[in-house]
Image 1 (cartoon, rainbow, N blue to C red):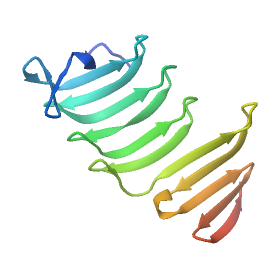
Image 2: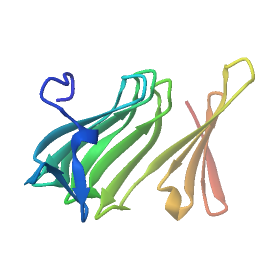
Image 3: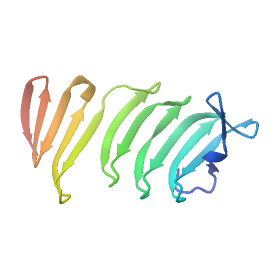
Length: 152
């Protein structure tokens, strides 16, 4: 959907009034593109009748995806995935009315100084204190003081 910026409007050409986006005096419907100062694409955002609605995708300055998800009536809605700058998943979450809702997955990485992976902490449904921790090839799952080991 966002492979080309041919039909995208420059986001900075839009005017915002009362949380609504306009081109001139017309409510904007379509894809808006934000760019970094160096000209690289920062984000694609979908608007419908002046409000964020539909898919969005944002990028790091290196061009890798930073986040992708959906807006509904100007609020985060549905599945969102956030990425580290190297392209690996940082967090997955479900949003409803702009707030996290349902299962979530947060991945926290810790690296050695030489860049090799030391540990990955995956917290599933971390708002409810359930977590999975990966250290090397072993996984440990903890739910409020209870734990079990799972080998990969």
